[in-house]
Image 1 (tube, rainbow, N blue to C red):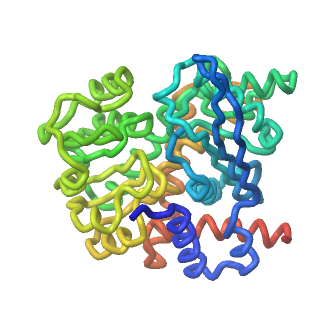
Image 2 (spheres, rainbow, N blue to C red):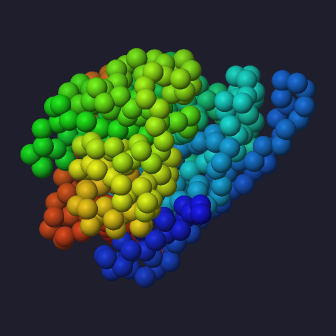
Image 3 (spheres, helix red, strand yellow):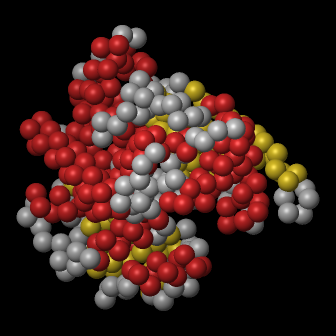
Length: 411
């Protein structure tokens, strides 16, 4: 039976609230998003027909600053999913002490079924209807699953033309040519790998020669894999929406990346074809879910044979699986920490846009690494001292930061 993602998100939130004895009023405020925006907009297709397209923008909380969160193009999105992701963005930004609230958006299409002209038209039309709800001091969207820098460029251009002024800071994740930041493309993967390195350092675990499997080989998965290869780790299995393959001798992650860019999936890439159950029961050191939510549920968790999981995706593990992993002593680096590198560099892009200056890739990635290490250590220390998981240490630190602001400002 399919689970509702918002059930997971609220359950995690409320467990963390109970653990940290959060102020009752703050608890009430965080239960639901402030704004749930649904827009059905018409777009003319290449064949001349008009198609009505459903889209969402959920703005969860903005006590810390403007709403901030990605936009995904995916045919399976639903309102409660976007609400969950918006809530996690609130927590993620608070955990990293960024001056942002949380939001998320989506357009309910399969981008692989549309031409480039149609995708441009959908992107620009969505932005036209969304314009009054977003802005560099109001709500700042970014790329997510199914979107990229080109889509952010089109949306930024549309927003600027409608407002008759330059407002590069309204979107992040743009191309460098259109005001984006160096280092943004690899930022999420870079943050994931920084967390893995810190975990290995704390646990005296040599990563050289160790194995991992990765589910999802888009921007986040591919950049994570390439960076892990530089540490001497081996990818023995990989999966995406087209299926799963393994190679116990290890994949060439660079060739794999080139193939996925060209063919849009792993389909027909050389390797032994396996099913999802076999994939998640492979013996390896680290498992990296880097695509969809709710991919490791109770049944999959029972089969896992790894030492650690790092949530490069949002919400990939359900509550039952979390309990199983605790019993099996498999540590989890949670999503709101592990994949927060993307929004950290989005913040750096926003700062560069507002200051009209540009930083080198070395500057950006150095700042990101220091930020990820600082936050990881803070979470790890809290986890150890209070005997809670890294997930709930992350949640509690985030919630307490939000609580402080509410108590200072009043309700």
